[in-house]
Figure (cartoon, helix red, strand yellow):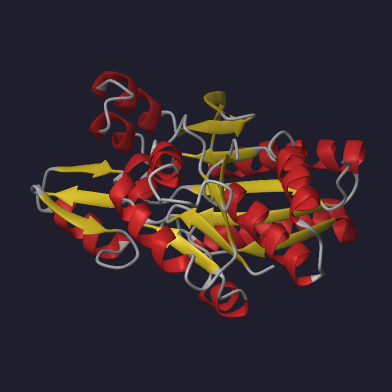
Amino acid sequence: MKVAIVTDSLTNLTAADLQRYPNVYYGYLNVIVNDKAYAEQKEINNKKLFQMIDEGATYSTSQPAPEEFVQLYTKLLKEYDYILGLFCTNNVSGTVNSARIASTMVEGAQDKIKVIDTNTASIGVENIVLRVCQLLESGSNLSEIINVVEFYKTHGPMYLYVDDLNTLVRTGRLSKTAASIGNLLNIKPIIGLSNGKLDVFDKVRTKKRVFKWIVEKLREDVKSSGKQIVRITHVNALEGANELKQLMQEACGDQVEVHVGNEIGPVMAIHFGRGGVGACWMPDHYEI
């Protein structure tokens, strides 16, 4: 059976992974700047986005409409026998709802498309997508693969820290006064995504303490469930991402496989701002 994987553009796989797995396709979210929509990854990058924001542009984001997925599904079903959709949690983006609605709009395709809310986002979805691609490559059947996805939906914590608190002011998540005090005290909120729920898990001072906090969480999961596959992303902070990778490897040795992926795309970068770093991991071994 020939299977296509459809995910959302927040996943943002590396060029090397997309080349290795040409059966992965995107539904593209949009950044709307000064009332003009740009498909992230295709029509706008972070450098261009932040340049426009610095010049005073208004901005927001939007998910793809169901019709866009209908067009993609219709095209893919001419080449593939089945479509497996793996999407960002509905708590972060409604894209999964558009993808699910579209799956009911393609005539005769209801048994050929399955859409799953992965309970995670960005690099968390990336981890799941790549594991699914590996399983397909090794000949695993769809039933087993879907069970593996269900396992990882509850075994994939993700943590990101916001370096520039003014970003949270612009997106309405923090008052100007609180941001001013936080910046003055060098406070870094650690935002976590666990079991599909997005929340502030802690607030610490300095990036060094943030990284120590994240590494300790990783060590706990290594101790409880063995080797972890880790993916790190960032917004204009490659040096920080590589620093976190080194700290993880020093702390956990061969019990972690750490990858620094692409920079977070424009839609998520709007919310986390320049300088942020995030990490997500999942157990190498799964139980189904």
